[in-house]
Image 1 (cartoon, one colour):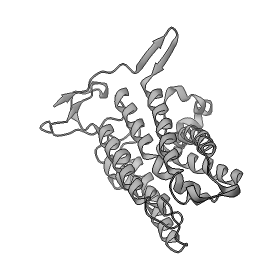
Image 2: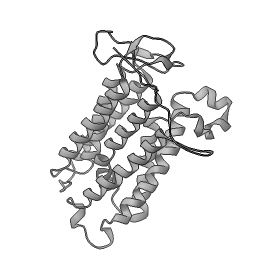
Image 3: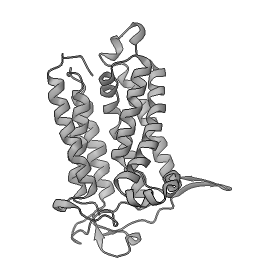
Image 4: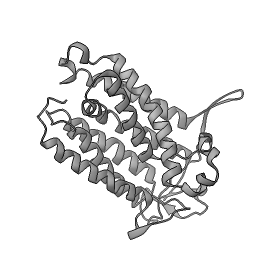
Length: 273
């Protein structure tokens, strides 16, 4: 049985300026997106598109800019609407208090979809071509965020068998009960494993929207599994059928992914890479 190593959330203090590890993990996520998206530019069909629809490094940078806005706005609004709607309805100004924490992946995902729709529309690019480009570049950024969760000692897991070699005591949970380090599970499942699956899947020609569909299905299923080991939000607990809010939000995500994959199967095959 392990004990959570108390890590100072502040990575660097420069006078009144505090640079937090969590902020650095976000920067790492954005850097990983730039690196992977730059590699995607060399893949088909993106490398062979010429004329007004050609892809460039500037497109990648603009996609990231729009995506960052989508993550922040969508993630915050999603948390307020999905997890504490009554509270924020009574305290609407606190929706803007992002420094108090509270972000939702599912809200951030919706924000990214909206931002990339705007990007595609403004550049005259097919929406699903944009989304299929983006999807394999996202999971390692999600993995980076889970590192930030672990460093902050937040989103710890449910109680675990003390004999489990990696069971960990999180003193900030208010008890000395050994727990699953669910942040590590999510790092490995939603981050590393999903990246490997998507990157390999996207290396072969796929029909329109099917890379995006695999992201939705893959993340939804892997997050659903990880939620069995993650402590539910205290103010919500477990909901209907003994499922957490995170699991319930994954259900429509998986269903949408399956429907999208079936729809894509009826579309012409493209040389996505």
